[in-house]
Length: 101
Image: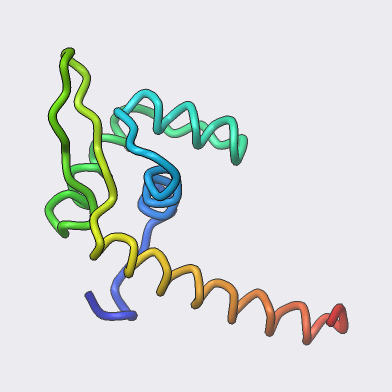
């Protein structure tokens, strides 16, 4: 995926949530709401999960109940690290230009 392709917020939040631990959809929604005070609806969440899964950034893992847990893949970790570095560069420059660093 090139750096000029669109990167959506749900993707970022989902990958960050799964970077900490494997979770099913509802647990991802809860984690995002608690961590960032952002409520992502089920349609948005599962649409994003489907797109991220097709990109091989996450994968479902076996479960003993009807919930479908997901885990981040090595490709997903690499992509997340790249995007977080890009965001860090942008925020650092912004703070510098504001005279804050």
